Image (tube, rainbow, N blue to C red; front, side, top):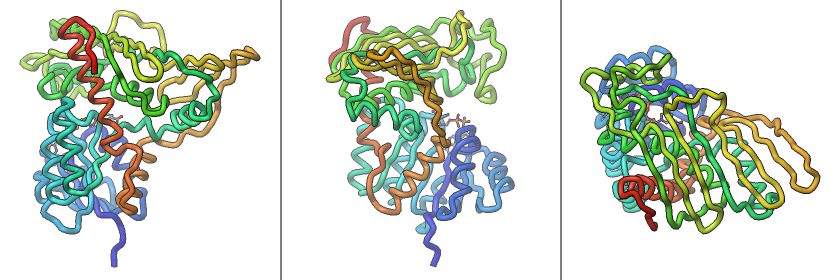
Length: 355
Ligand SMILES: NC(=O)c1ccc[n+]([C@@H]2O[C@H](COP(=O)([O-])OP(=O)(O)OC[C@H]3O[C@@H](n4cnc5c(N)ncnc54)[C@H](O)[C@@H]3O)[C@@H](O)[C@H]2O)c1
């Protein structure tokens, strides 16, 4: 009997090719029966590339109708997360859905309710929860090593990084927003996680669409998600810069984020945890530095950081096997989606929003 967990990959774009397929194809207890993309060549390319990827399809419902399939990976653009996930849960499949959960909080709640109703796992790709540095910071905070973390500052700023201008990423109806929902979800979710499940209480935020409001005159060196760009007839109505302040039941958080800004001063991707005993600066995706308030020593960590997507996929597959919810289970991520909605609402209303 084949005891492997049988999965289907839905959406064979960048995150499938760069993260999930390389990780899942190395797992001996996983069978990748289907790869699906509405662009047939993308699914076919995955079958060609990996010996252990079996069938390319263009309609995900083929995989959902197959009783052998235990779980699906929803790796489509944000606007499709809701429909594909809901269909998959109703077909009795466990789901790993990429971040953000979907384009807004109310639909995210519906997805969580459906997972509960169907008794299936629904995990969300906030992969930083599986980053080794984030795990260590969470543990240090849990053990009280920072003393009281009273404030966290985070910066997710780049000089030129608007993805696929005019395509899925910059069309609010399809993406749910810009840099805040795309990058901010990773930073803010990992902060709430390190703080031990902090609950936002009230927020204030300003989101701007400035740098490419005239798409044709936007100057850039290269553009990720270039294949989806449509500067002639597409839409760009999302935030390329965002600034905000969050009060939680634990620390307060301030942040600035930019997909593009006219500043080019090196690494703008970091998080500062300010404790009364110690503080830590996490270089996003990398190591962190601890500053000890008593000895005035500065210690740079040098631990191994295994691939966070691989660790996340391992966590999900193990959860499918055991039935236990993994740390990215949707109920643990809803607070982050609620926070994003509140931040956007504050920006629109130009006033503080209470959660
Ligand atoms: N966790 C991370 O660090 C991370 C990084 C990048 C992207 N993402 C998320 O992953 C998702 C995909 O991003 P991407 O950069 O890979 O985008 P992409 O555009 O490269 O890939 C998406 C693919 O989905 C396909 N698709 C669309 N609708 C489909 C459907 N109904 N059925 C099957 N295939 C369909 C598209 O044709 C495309 O090939 C987004 O939600 C994004 O936010 C997460």
